[in-house]
Length: 149
Length: 179
Image (cartoon, rainbow over all chains, first blue to last red; front, side, top):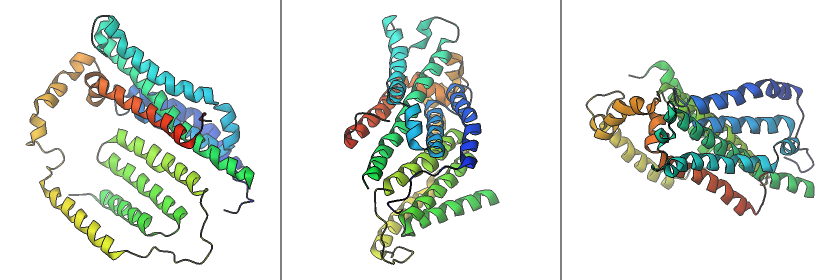
């Protein structure tokens, strides 16, 4: 790669493909997170799918425009919020006099199943946030160096 | 025995793994490594581990490749003419070969997939999970039931490790923001 070449090249084929595919992949990611209770999948897998799609969007539309849309507070909110969701669901039964993650104490029908789905959603948020955040954090230095050259 | 598809897949994985090691150009090696991951994802499907396959395809073939690509843009490509393939370091080949032979030696002792008479099929704990997971949690996927209910505290630790990894990367890069 020569120093003068622009790191991002617009391609209407890639942009259109990503634009059409993105909503389906995000939905599939959510599906995998929730559906981990009934078939293959779970929070780690679903989060990975969502993060891969965010990186694909950054590839198609350029890292800088995506960075503006996927701002830092959103990433931190995903990551910290995921940990918080998991912790709150876990500690809830302790406040009700049980042990960590003792779902049945929540009292409603199939509490364990819904509790697990909540936990998976939290895990998915953490994984999606950390992986895409990692990408943007590493890409940041890359573009900074470009400007200097 | 293995089917034709499995044989082709395994050959592809083996070939792309070798290509990753032997190719001198880092960019070519990264592409070969992505192909290797994609092949491995298909192997997971054949082995009926679709959840592992999903992760392998998204992380191994997708995200890792992108992170590698971003990293090598910080390096300089050698300008002088170099050979296409890396020179093979024979003492290293001998050591790795011996290690691989040792590992392969244990393979015949692994029970066949789906074999009945193996120790872990009669383990009290797994039998308990298989018998009671649906009754107790109303979750059809036993793996998820073990992961998020029976061993939920471990999984909480795992999730926090991912969180900590993200924070550590920011600390190492001396950044305060992800994006």
